[in-house]
Amino acid sequence: MNNYITAVCAIKNGKVMINDKVDFTNNAAGSDVDFLKSVYLHYQVSYPKFYKMDSLCKLAMVASELLIKTNKITERYKSEDIAIVIANSGSSLEVDTEHQKAISDKVNYFPSPAVFVYTLPNILIGEIAIRNKIKGENTFFIFDKFDAEFMSSYVNSLLNSNKEECCITGWVEFYDNNYEAFLITVEKNKEGNLNITNTKEELTKLYINQAQLAAS
Amino acid sequence: MMTELMDKLKGEIITQLNLEDLKKEDISDDSPLFGDGLGLDSIDALELIVLLEKNYGIKIANPADGKKIFQTIRTMAEYIEANKK
Image (cartoon, rainbow over all chains, first blue to last red; front, side):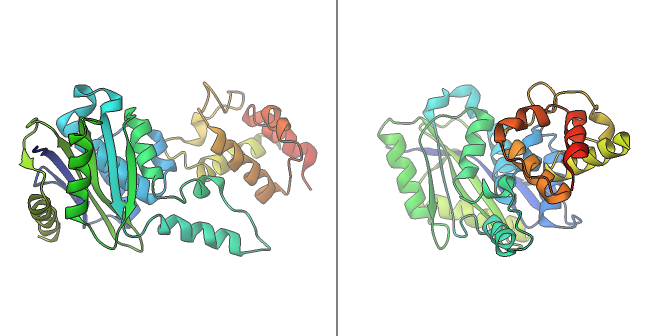
């Protein structure tokens, strides 16, 4: 049974791409975190908790926000019918490193609880789920690189088993001055503007397209 | 003295808790920090405990005391005044 990629949001290299088009660019931001803040402000996302999140969650939060705004899945599906399946390679290393620094100074030993709570990559799924009241199945994978074959097959299996009607899936990475979000929605029916069949080949093509747009 | 301390505390809380939407003048001396006031959560409460220890050398021995101490900016400042080393 075919399932369809109905929308895509990618954030990389100072650009936000929605449904295969560059929608926002800011190459003047002082840092990657400043860039994410500029995206948050540009799209008028109103969620003060954004400022408390670590960089990985900030990236996932704004990308999912724009994706959901694009095809309104939370209005079209019950909260328990939407799954979230995301992967990356660096886990939560960015914030792990920050926490490690805080606990290695035995004299000035003040680890931050607000930093510690983000030292797991699947927290980003929790942040998306809380923000959008999504209650479907959720899973986080760690791979060396984006694995279109696994991700398309896993999500198709999830939808074809009738456990879920829709899935937010993709790749969210933030580590060592390298950030990349590539999130898509996959649905059983052609409900969006893209309507690309969710296969390894089509997903690979879409992923490469976003990278090329970001580099252009 | 108390006014200065409360002003300093507001700045420290904004920084420590990443309340980037807020300015010092948005936080009143007597409004609740949790619940309907600033809307802080349980992780913020832990950060406030760390803030007291890091910036003022005050350790809260009994966590149950936190509810009274962190009621408002004023109650925090009064506790610091009475316990600072």
